[in-house]
Figure 1 (tube, rainbow, N blue to C red):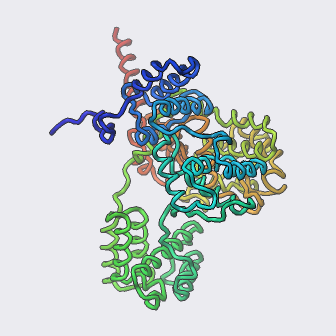
Figure 2: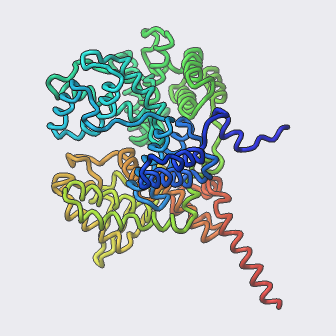
Figure 3: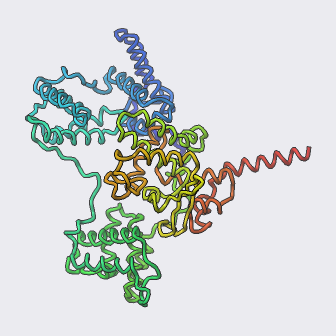
Length: 566
């Protein structure tokens, strides 16, 4: 078997004659017409970008398609520099590439525009609408530069702009920049008199498979709701009744999955009149049609959703009292599309946890809530200050109470927080609110209690109406924010401030990592911290996570034994 060098893999799609950063540096140094300051800035930018990529100058190809995905992953905080400094470095590196003709120079000045576009752009600037003035200039300058007049803009013009971005962009996502510009164009057409009235289109980000309720068989929807009602409120005297009620979250998942599956059957050509009830989905022949369609759309492979729907059909066949033959056939289908049981953490989560094994990075994360909360005081807009404090509080809660993000987002001040007479505060999650039906209790540290009280005293009316019982309320104060929305905010802030990719659920893995690293083998305490239903599940998920702590403990034991025998 031929051994392939890593560089051969990394540069496999880079053309052999592609220049390297070292060639650009040499060209810039040799250009006597460049002012010394500009020479220095360009070379500094190339050096800083190469350093961020952990490569010498002669191993960084001047290829935009090679650079873009790699530079997009770099976070300034991880390099120990400000976002502005990194932006300047990338800009200087790109300027060097433009200087030698690798990419196009950017036209930014209003005088670079043709007279017609210049007049229209002056109107945009006069509006002082940053939504337009920040998102549109590259597209407008592109149209002007290629000679497309205002009345001649077409969808082809927009597609050509995307091609130009893909050719010249080196750090940001060309598609994201393009979508932002096209959305801003359509917005300008509605807001600005005289703006070209052509609506540009964007492709859907994802294929929508589930049909709207109006397109689903009414009898099926009626039967579905009746079944879900019985599952949420079972009759304890009925022989076929479930042992206990399903939680609202589970009911929502079942509703979503069954609507998705009946949509797949309709899309596959199954007549509407054949799908009049839930039991119709459990017909083995129909079930196979729907599952086959989903597998085909997934590239011929199964996935978690397909496996869950197949298992749900199998379980429903039993609850609906269908024949043994039907149940056995559905069980076979479920087995064929089943996803192998996960052993340990996913590779992605292990990779995202690895930077937190560095003490400096971990300390940045642990100190982040206090840093952001204190910095919020200097914000001039009360809403932005309250939003920063709320985000900091959420991170602090996840750090000290590694709960699922849904539990954090839905904290009810009256139901989940218990204030003791001596100043202590406990966060209580009852069994009906926990995924594993294991009640959990955390005593909040004093600094977190202080942060909590200060935020609650200052959040109204900027975040919600006074008197809202939700710790993380929607802006109308009538309900809690969704877990996904809160998680997205935390992820964005941590990436910006710490320079790592970390979602809300990773705080649970981090808690296990920190505990097992300090206490190798102590899985029962880890189970209690995380609220798992069994220690075996905790061991299966985190076995081996404490390897570093275990090896250090063993080394200490050897040192102790040697010392005792000398």
